[in-house]
Length: 286
Picture 1 (cartoon, rainbow, N blue to C red):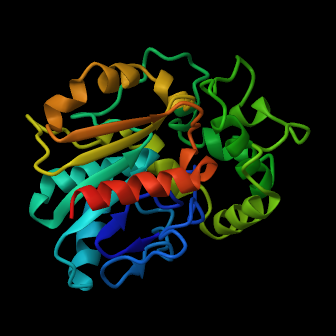
Picture 2 (picture 1 turned 90 degrees about the vertical axis):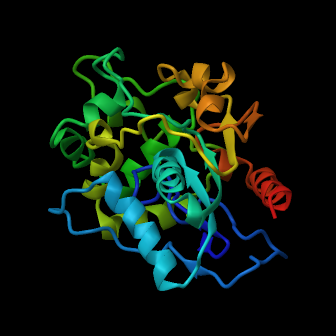
């Protein structure tokens, strides 16, 4: 994922535990960005004792654009990587040409999951050391494997009393058909180097510190892709925000495309279709 006339804020090891730098092939084979590109994938997470903030992510993107002398970009965000993309566009409309996001609708304030069951994975993982103890029972490859299995399903990952999230799948549970052992090896190698502490800070332990926008209004076009079998679609208020027109109140120039069979990892599941959609949006906004 590169930075040229667009900038990726994908949910990688900097922005969450789900997804990594092999998320999907961009630019597509046979195409090239209209301006020189510089990969964001090589960025390292901060030291584990550094407290993460959403504002830091926005500042990081701005600093990269300034360092590369790039004035305006299209922003691409996946999962909670969508949040710094949305925030950047609102804070720096003069540096933004458009926003393309997958999986997470815009919210003017922090998400509230207090109505979800106690075993809901976000509630579990926001507890200090809860996920570390859960993950620590297994090697990194097993943790990444379980996350991909659970989060590729349409059901929200919820553990029962006395059960941890990693207990919701075992080694006999097959990987999604579009996710290979080679992919798993590559992702596990990334997390072997980075660890899980920072990805747990952003987003899970920082949701309550998400930026609160007062009367937000996007001055740039916004494009959202949503897999209809993405478990996030079942989060409180998510589907309503997208289907009822609530997002249009914040983004007057909004386009939403639904992928009927799309899972939480729609960009890996249907990479060619996602690339076509993103390229189409770019062509529509030269």
